[in-house]
Image 1 (cartoon, helix red, strand yellow):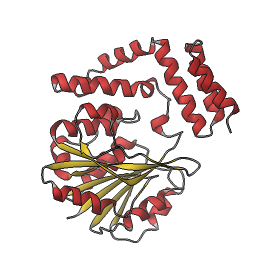
Image 2 (image 1 turned 60 degrees about the horizontal axis):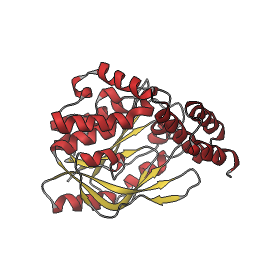
Image 3 (image 1 turned 120 degrees about the vertical axis):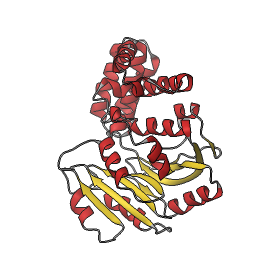
Image 4 (image 1 turned 90 degrees about the vertical axis):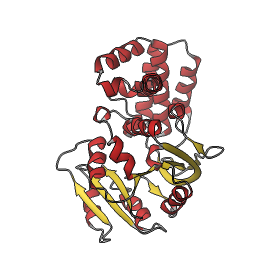
Amino acid sequence: MLVSVIVAVYKCEQYIRQCVDSLINQSYSDLEILICDDCSPDGTWNILKSYTDARVKIYRNEVNQGVVSVRNFLLQKVTGEFVLIQDGDDWSDSRRVEQLLEVFRSDNTLSACGTASYRIDNKGMITNLAKEKSFDITLEDCKNLPFMPATLMLRYKVYEELGGYNPYFNGLYSEDLYWILRIVEKFKVFYLNKPLYYYRFNSSSITNSVGSRNKLIVDELMHVLIDQRKQFGEDWVERKNHIAIDKFVVTKFRDRKWLSEKYRVVAAVQRDGNKRRIAFTYILKSLACNPFAIKNYITLKYILFSR
């Protein structure tokens, strides 16, 4: 059974070789490794061009298009029965594909599977993100998904029926979570409690970016969309009701306590990434929104005095 791996890449010069090597060296070898460089300004593309393994197929955008466009492009290139996701700065356990296929072979009704993972911080510290057990995923579980979306393997027929990532989320974050909740809604999805994926935590990555207001609110928005799908079978994004989404965003941002906590969390994440100046900027925003929250001062102390 051919497994197609899709890897969206942008500015991964430091990590891309480890990423690709982990796929080339899988214990299961019937792979096609589809990689698209989204116009990286560094040496990523030159590294990709150095690979001679016939299973590695590389593409490059002449202009940056965003991760949603890149992944959808790669999904159109897939020829395998299964699709495996990987991010360009992460890497896989050498038996990741083999063990995931074993799960699919044991259950013909299974359409998608995500796994536990290891988180690697900027100091090289490894955290096992495994849960207590393996279990089937429900739509409610998508509010606190037990696996990283990048650990997903799915049957190609799922993409054929549902299509790819929704373009609304391009540059916003949570495009993968929204895709997964739509998969969970119609197909059987399983969480495998084995850490087979190494996720490189980057405090400055898009998942921690606050360049736009919607990035701060996307988790709450996703919860609303899940509830809408449970109740009505559709949501604001599917109906392209962007006016309702904008109204929701404005309402949330008028809640100063909520906004303060969001800024505080961003500040702590940036400090974890050793970005003190950015962390200090956001803890000041947090204090401005809610100067009476004790947690804000605890985080301020952490930013100023921790090593």
